[in-house]
Length: 207
Image (cartoon, rainbow, N blue to C red; front, side, top):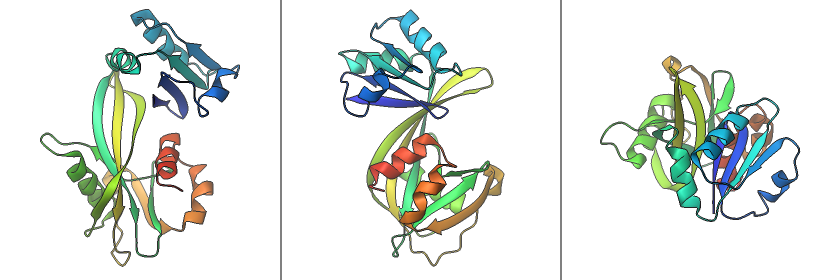
């Protein structure tokens, strides 16, 4: 089992197993490996992941839940939810935010369920009105700094369905400039202008 945390577009794996996804990073000169669970160790790994020369990290411990708990203590965890939307033509909805291709998501409001948040954010950010949940996909994690605080966004992603004959309207006050339907074949080139966590969402959905 592992947790994959994105530092910008660099992956850090918190893991209790070196599987086929993680194993190649063990041999990379620009990757950091650590297997000592301690507060200084966690601090050191976070520091290393922010260095320009480091492109990946692997933090190994036999109790990955204990490792996760120690790591989460260093951040303010921000729950969020969003969706990968498909229409009747098997086209997928994608949008451009701050110049990069992204998927609709946002922070969970107090008292709101993850599922309700996901649908609301899709509707608000894309202009879609008729949206239905089709199942859970994946949880992604990425870190960022805001007002001097270290945050860890925990994004819960759902597969959704929406008829494609609806008006698309980007939520410009969220710096979204474009929303459109794309064919699955168009995904790989667009991911080059996206975020690594978004690639994980498409991968979880089988694309």
